[in-house]
Amino acid sequence: MMWKTSLRATATVLALLTSQVLGQEDGSEPQTAQIVSTKGFILDTILDWVDAARLDQTTYNGEKYGCKCYPGRPCWPSANKWDNLNRTVDGTLRVNVPAGAVCHNTFDGPFGAIQTYDEAACADAKENFLSYNEQWTVEKPADGLWTYFTNDTCRPTSNPSDPCTLGSYGVYVIMATKASHIQAGVNFARQNNLRLIVRNTGHDFLGRSVGYGSLVINTHSFQSLKWTDKYTGLGSYRGPAVTMGAGVQGGQILKAGHALNPPMSLVTGECATVGLSGGFIQGGGHGPWSTLKGLAVDNVLNFEVVTASGLIVNANEWQNPDLFFALRGGGPASYAVILSTTVKTFPDLRAAGATLYLNTTHTLDNEVIWAGTKMFHKYSNHFVDNGLYVYFEIFPYQFRVRPFVAIGKTQAELQAIVKPMLDEFAAAGIPHEFNIKQFPTFYDLYMDLFEPEQAGQTVLTGGWLFNHDDVANRNDDIITAMRNVVSPAGRRDLFGGMVGHMFNPGHNVPVSTSAAHPAWRNATDFVIVVLPSPEHPSLAVKNDLQNVLTNNMDEGFRNVSRSGATYVNEADPFQPNWQSHFWGSNYPRLKQLRKKWDPLGVFYAVSTPGTEEWEEIEFNTRLCKKL
Image 1 (cartoon, rainbow, N blue to C red):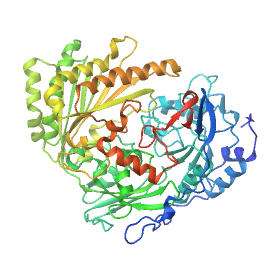
Image 2 (image 1 turned 90 degrees about the vertical axis):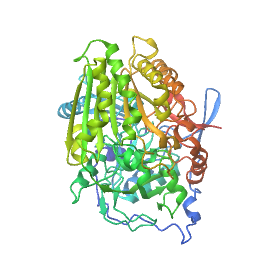
Image 3 (image 1 turned 180 degrees about the vertical axis):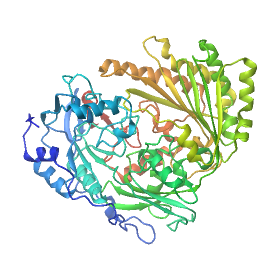
Image 4 (image 1 turned 120 degrees about the vertical axis):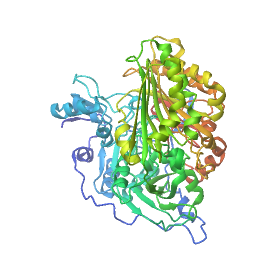
């Protein structure tokens, strides 16, 4: 590789770019430090910030700001400091090069230009990226599964002369394999005023797994699983549980649980690639078991984390209970870096599943498709009140349910639950395809009926939660708002879509001690809104799309609903009143806890507690505070 460095060339940078991981060890080192006294009071050393660097002062558009430090600034760490960090993390530090760079002649990175084209590697990248293979992207050091917030600057391409820059990706990545690597990364970011990104899988719709000019800590190697029939940790619970490393994904742990005798399960997301201990649980976590077992945060027993001060602590009912509260739904990348999470498990059960399709293979009349959609949606309360989880999609000329999930029920029981809807379809002459099937366990249903999601797409994401009252009294208005999402603002140049999730965490868990929005206890249908973007959109196009999403598509949902709530991880982060929409009455406490556990903003994710003062200036690049 040939470097043309525009900044000070160093042997360190070249070594980091070309090195292999050295000195790797397994994750079996002791990771718990006893930081809490016998009475549960926090020792002062947890909240020690004396070594934190100052913000980098700058002026932008006539305003004074204090910013994180970025390449090219005098505060940027020297090559010697980076070299020392690399030794501290056992050679796991990398200069970040986006996966798509192998399809480009040149990668123009922050340290200069480098030749990157590799025909064989490019063919592999195009095959996997362009076929939306999520796991391929998950295994990369710092790439995002959805690329809108990366600035889309280095996608795999058939034209090697296309430009390739770092965009909003991080500059360096620590491919952490031990807790001490994560501690070192947190400490280095705090001591040098760097923007810090924690990345497990990159399964993130809102750009929280990427950040311009940042140091990235990759936690995906933390793959440990420890199952127990009887939890003996702090707290009153004594049933079965599993402790999982930060890198474990949903599909992986469901498979491991299925292999046990008897088969066991837990609350995961519907998508197999979701990492459970990252933003999923810190945002609340919903999935196919949520109507029966609540949100993922309702099942957490213990966290082992690295705090913003770089220390390892446990958080549970007895130790650091305020941190335990905040980590259970209080926002991703906000309070600590999770090393492991212990959650309740339960025996897997028989399950019945069904699919429903209504699209152009059945009719070319769009009004018929919407009539069927309206009939389906008015039964939302009926479905969740009977213990179901329902996953559906609505796009132009397409409505599909895949699947209806009836855990613990027979095919006959599921058939009886959906019969009123199907009878109404028949009476109205709505053409459709419906299939139903029995499965020995939920896991068998999951493998058969849930489809892989597609990564690599450039979209904006919004969404809203509809509760029981919304569906019972305003279903026609909801459908009108949904029609507007598919054809936003009547514009011919745009289209949208929706991914719906019918479940009610309050069905069997009516009261929660977590930080998740209290409105989830009366939920019926959470709908994700999708607005596709062209590749490489200009700032003007981005501003236009954001305006359409916030003030037209999502606003239609907000206007017809009385829930006042949406989901932290799958909604518009730039919506008005995001604080109350994401957390409701829990927000003031969460903001105070952020001031306690991370008062300097070592961690940052957009629209999370306590981040109101931060903004990305200079065309959505540098993270700063107004002074």
